[in-house]
Length: 68
Image (tube, rainbow, N blue to C red; front, side, top):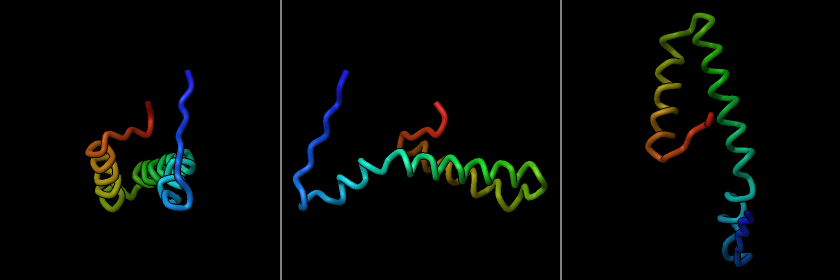
């Protein structure tokens, strides 16, 4: 199976960057989620749990999942 994305540059430069950098954004969010989870685990529950919940709810609202 192949998927080919085509963009009309320079008009769709922003869309192209979003598509081509998607994996990097995903990895960044995974790192952030892991950092929050570790912070919660090691005693900063109140401060970080609300942020982690907010992040996960926003992802769910958009149909996104960090770990499949």
